[in-house]
Length: 471
Ligand code: FRU
Image 1: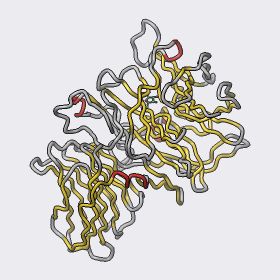
Image 2 (image 1 turned 135 degrees about the vertical axis):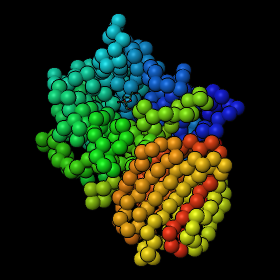
Image 3 (image 1 turned 90 degrees about the vertical axis):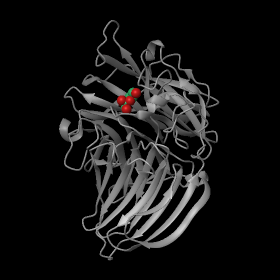
Image 4 (image 1 turned 180 degrees about the vertical axis):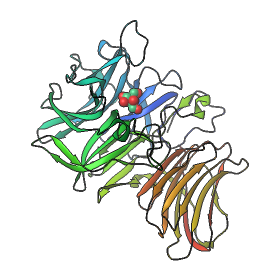
């Protein structure tokens, strides 16, 4: 990204090819869309300091989902309908204009309790995709359903036939999370249709559902959302809040969504508040916020905080979502620095660098191998991120030297391991076996990391490593 962080002198954590704010704070991706030849992504942004504050919409665009150009801030809060924040929302193209639909956040005058707020839904539009005008008659949804609490936000809008639909993250007065649906023919007047899905218990499925997204993918309907309040359960739901999905079938006659169990989309420490769009050639692409609420973000010392994940393509098979880096990311490759096939067992250093794509196949099946380790470690420091595959059980376990809480995923036992890994200055995204499991991590290794792999028996490893354009 072409950006100028606050401190340009000493920024070891500054990401190269990921979307981050030029300066200040970012959280959720917003308004992801394709408009007049560009992909646009917006994000929750506080430009004045590397901490959450009155939310703006920061903005970047790209022709290829790989190289991003920072644009001026698209939405600034402070108008009567978005007095204390332009919260998350989405975008839609209609009659050659780009419309942003977002939540206005409001505190009560003279009350400084941050839990005392109210929310409404607003619109802004643009002809050039750069300059936005707020709709003169905002809000477009001002009144909540009678059985809603103050949690009423994050509109995701889409078109189906002649109609527009919009869902919101919501909390019912029973203090359970839910997703509620609206319909419109003009984007301005919205009819409330009711909840399409709701939590079956605060500790099992959440007291509030943020950032919902709803789409059809590979023959299934998918509700992707970020529930708050799910309790940790052995090796699942270990982050403060989760992002995951239900797959099932939406019944248009009853506006109800019949679905299966909640599944997490990414197994890493740093993944939240996703948003998807469709590419012109019909691929469903997702961005997430590469962070977690309340986590330490050492990059704040550099004047910025938070970033978006790489864009990833989603697929659905047998009720499971698979997430792989978009094919356009090959545009970031500047040099093919390794193509090697070797037999190894004990710790072997494969490469060193903090702007690399590492493609690795470990042939483990029926070799008697029991433990395989993939470890990024500082050349001088002892800081590390380690991914262990227990070949006999299929359990993947990710550990980090700066945290004492591991993260887990389970794939098949006795499998070959195919890893596609993106290393940026302080982020690591590990895609395992065509996106069956994914770990997204911000890591904070002071010096340039080296990649080590190790196995308890001699196995064959194929590695293809590319240097990436740090932009
Ligand atoms: C999710 C979220 C949204 C809200 C936004 C505020 O991370 O809490 O529900 O719109 O962040 O920044």
